[in-house]
Length: 260
Image 1 (tube, rainbow, N blue to C red):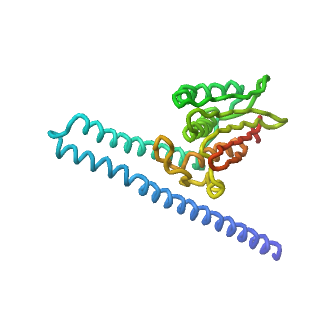
Image 2: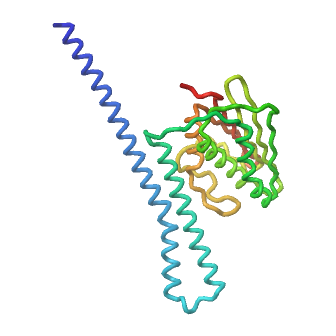
Image 3: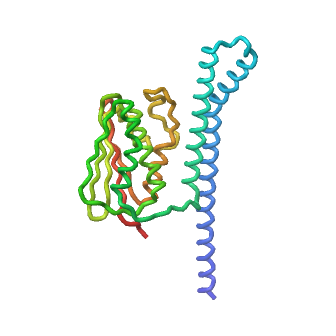
């Protein structure tokens, strides 16, 4: 009887512990959702308000609009709409990656070919800005087990930031190395860099280092948090070295083979 009572007590303790953990998980989800809704409201209120105000103004005075004035105001509406859509897409991607039922689709790929195709997509954009992209790849191909879509999203985000925050006539260098277990990709730019004050927080959700880039586009603050999440879903890690006005280096390490 004593052994039976002890067994019941142990089971009750275990269930109580599990219930407490679930309550904590639920509280965290509620906190994140509340924060997310607050950020949605805060970040969309201004651009949606701009769209409404300028649309209302145009409709009220449409007969007196010159082509120049109409073009100017339509560009303002377009920019506000573009930011709103980009923000919603970023939030949707963030929520998707955080979902408990999110699944990765791993497959074995030739990593250097995969990366080279991504780099090619940025060549014209870099050329327009007079930025040089250099690659430093090993001669032998590297096989890696990755989710091509998700890792493409991650690398696109890092490269887009490198070009966006690098001034004309500078260089971006993409290097790849490997060891026994990992493939290491380094993306080094000569951009505006990140201050020591901001560096510890750049992967936090909605943390904005530079509100505007050189092209005056407003930052959303979700790109690098998604980058970190995708790297972690590949059982890897991402490190950053940066100095203000001296550029940044993102070092991405992922296993060649999927961990089970």
